[in-house]
Amino acid sequence: MQSKKTMLLSLASSGATRNALTKRMIENLDIDLPSREIQDSIAQVLDSIQYKITLNNRLNDYLEQLVDGKFQELFGGLNFNATLSDVAEITMGQSPAGSSYNEEGAGIIFYQGRGEFGWRFPKRRLYTTEPKRLACEGDVLMSVRAPVGDLNVAFENCCIGRGLAAIHSETPSFALYLMRFLKPQLEAYNGEGTVFGSINGKALKSLEVALPSHNEVMQFESFAAPIDALIRSNENETRKLNNLRNYLLPKLMSGEIDVSKVDLTQLTNNHLADC
Image (cartoon, rainbow, N blue to C red; front, side):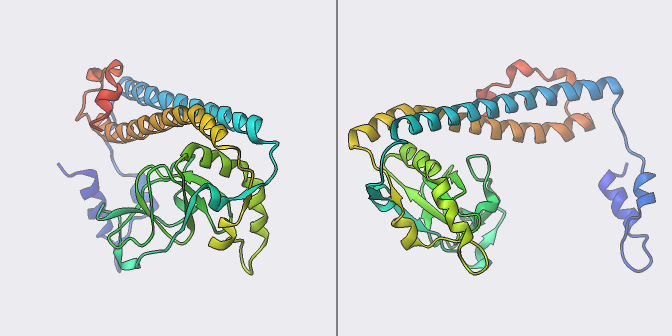
């Protein structure tokens, strides 16, 4: 029996001058659908996965707001007394040769700019075999081109392009929430530049900040770091759940996996580790 992909290719080859599928061909294509009962069971499995993803996202939102509030409470009233270079090491991104880009996983993960940004962690899309500027896992990644100041956190060691800067600190949680606190200050750069907003390395390093005492920074780090670790753990589970959902859907629809054999109570972190 022909697969649906083979049937589509066969239909496309019927075009007179070039391969083409018409709207009518697609509408009249026969497909095999499982029974409504099986469809409902499949939807229940997928809904359960999505429900856990939604819970993770809501919890992460709450946790982030909790730490933002703590930072504001402790340091919101301080006056500027330092620059960002006193707090962290800043690396401005540099794009590798375009010929080194790939989506097959060769080399190191490469983030060009904020286009790959997610809620907190960027989404993997490109790799490069010729990295120029590197960021470490846990570094704050900041967009240096319009809009200036958008933030993410490096989920792993990676290469960064010219649209990003990496902010590396021995107290990464303090650095992250400091940059979030400075967002209004950074937005001023979006009105500068000839075509669109931008900030260069010199301006970023000399950005004025309010730096608490070392003991105060360490106390905040002790509070925030475990919460950030939980946020990362939730994000890691969510990524695995997304992969699991995408893996299951076509196999459940085709009958390759019997939906009645799927035990949702077994979808734990240990099982997700293999997804």
